[in-house]
Amino acid sequence: MIGTRFLQSGAAVMGEVELSCRAYVKMYLHACLFPRCSVNGLLLSSSSAGGAVCVTDCVPLLHSHLSLAPVTQLALTQVDVWCSQTQQRIVGYYQANACASDCSPTQAAMKIADKIAEQFDGAVVLMLDGSKMSPDYRVPPIVMYERKDSRWMLKDKHTIMLRQWEETHGIAIQMLESGDHSLLVDFDSHLDDITRDWTNQKLNAKIAELASPANGNI
Amino acid sequence: MASVSEMYDVGWEEMRDKLRKWREDNCRNSEQIVDVGEELIGEHSAKLGDDIWIIYEQVMIAALDCSRDDLALTCLQELRKQFPDSHRVKRLSGMRLEALERYDEANKHYDAILQDDPTNTAARKRKISILKAQGKSPEAIRELNEYLEQFVGDQEAWHELSELYINEHDYGKAAFCLEELMMSNPHNHLYCEQYAEVKYTQGGLENLELSRKYFAQALRLNNRNMRALFGLYMSASHIAASPKVSAKVKKDNIKYSAWAANQINRAYKVSCDFFRKDLNALNPLI
Image (cartoon, rainbow over all chains, first blue to last red; front, side):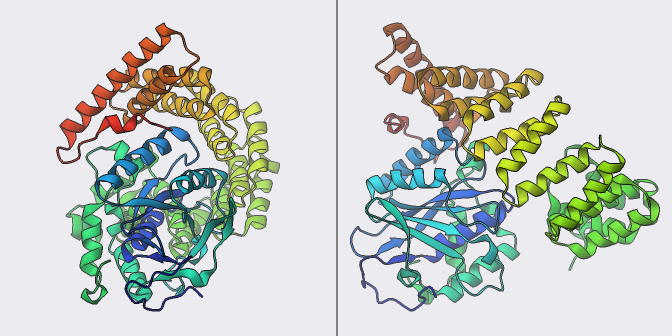
């Protein structure tokens, strides 16, 4: 069972990964926006290095040709630049496969993850489990991998923390049902129309609005 | 809940015309088709005349896409009543079974069609789709290759095959499929651009030069293709940076990449003043 207990602020424990509401909701909406495609994206953190890895945001990247190099390289570079301008860093990679019953990472996924791990030690790979994403599932549909001795290993569920899971889950479902997932812009969509914002400021604002004031920094 | 006609202030004729447009453009906006189609069938079926049958088919497929088996079954039953021995309707029955993941039964339907009519391409493609849905990519690829030996002009099949090869990281074979598509569709900028992306992914100097050429070709065909523009910039930059090229090739590629960078900057300047791109940061590209 993935840990859903409240964390004291500053309780930075080695090996733990914290997933924010904003990051989870956007990943979820990304997968829901393109249910017939494999989708992927990058996990970002605005926290300082050391202790727990706090995934505070994500950037949805592609929904087509995930294994082709040009757009992936371009996206990685652009996100990198944006991160350095906004005091964030790329700490991981997520993917949801088109085939809902298959949540194993692809070869291409691991290649990108390796690249990320070169720059960040505690990099993680997050796979969304398509078979567990419907509203009636009460458990986070997540499988995570981390690097140990140059190999990617399944991460212990107890070291994955989602603050306020019930509320996060509720926000994701609510936004899906009101059609807000159509507001999400991934890098692919940005290339189709460059006026669309892949940093998703509008969507971030909506998520923050829905999150309760008690949540603090989401 | 408000009806579609209330929400968008449209009459039944506009709804019918919208459905036709979506059919013609082969759009997969299934949620919309279900919303519009369900209302049209529910409230205005008498006015639709013979159009109703093709609308039943369109709505049924969209309903399967949205897990609306209730609606799909309603449409299917109407079609079965009207066209009791039709292969086309039998294929729809098969598709419903696929949606319910009853693949063995679905395959029986398609095999029955093919027994009767071995040239029925729709049934063969459904069988390949089942292999794909079951994650049996190598088998799907093999069957699709066999299909294409017989039906060598089927664009949709070539494209599907290229996608399957890309997913399996078999870029050489994906490139071959895209070459077939480019030959029969020389004005399609998307095929050029996809071919260029595959070549770029394969890597190596020769492939990079090919990729640059095809990104450029895609741009000639559609000068607003941003992927092609970025692709041209990146491939030319890589070639210019390679120690294996002659001074002339280096110089030429620096020119191409500078041109592309300029075009990219212009496009962003025009489109979004708050979202400036710092292209110098794109230089260390690997």
